[in-house]
Image (cartoon, rainbow, N blue to C red; front, top):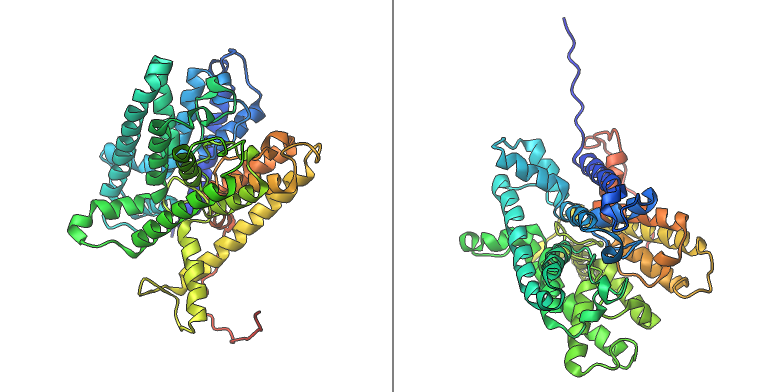
Length: 455
């Protein structure tokens, strides 16, 4: 009797990890080509790997100024890497399967939902079409609005700038084409331009809310209610934007290198923009390197938190922070269960929160030490402990803001940043799960209860 071997199927986490590795490898190869650089010559493969990883992981760290070094073809490749990395490659593949008329099996939905950090969808086919559809609508709207501000100054290239920065803003990537105002200057040359800064900020916020929240809004007419997840995301997003705006106003009000010389309206605009972009997008309208170390440390906290699950942003996620807050609150109030908006949270949510925090702190800590001890000259600007911590958190949270450490470090430091960016985008939990080959089923195993002292 023939023996049929059971087909081994890749786990969703492993599919996600391998998919991003393939995207990065393809982007590295394409950026190496002479046509991708303005000089028409081959680019160092390592620099291309760093750029491709930063783009696919929607971070924003750059080796070369995007406008000054890369040709239009190179810029298009970077934009495509950002688009695929922002929406999630599994989501895009699923969309094209739908467009081709192919059926979506359970495993296809499981893989895609892992990329959105949501375990199941009742209307899988619809939500994936909506993700692509509304992403294109938001990006197109942002490009049109910014074109009115950029076309008069930059002509036809201003339209491409608007398209490129609309994609990068929505995907929370932080790449820009404003290098003609000064290489590596980000959006500092637009700090008095509300049309550009507000449009980019709105795109960042929408992308950072997450596809699950979008779906809830789109089906609100039928359901007549917001889910617990959506309410949590909206409350935390609003609170963090407000808190961040007040923080930047307070800490940089008199700094002549940042907000000090601006009038109140410009101060408020740039403080708001910094609050929005520092949590995951990575655009600069005021230089992070010119901010005080107190402000840089506060920005580290905002970056570490990041955006919402299932979004284009990174970080530990704002829902993780909320779970920590309500867990502490429930314990202080001597409640038996952890409650959020009059809902009891499953203990698995608490476990995942603890694991996420532990792995995230570990990744940031290792990156910080590697950056600090790989600095060629620790007394140079941007090479201090605060700056190294800032850039380590920025890499993990896929923010892309820099206090100068990323530019100062050598090859070893950049390798660590590449790994950290990848971990931050894919998620440390997903990476660990992708490496676990066989997990025994422990549902029927009973172990004795134990007690230890805490605190």
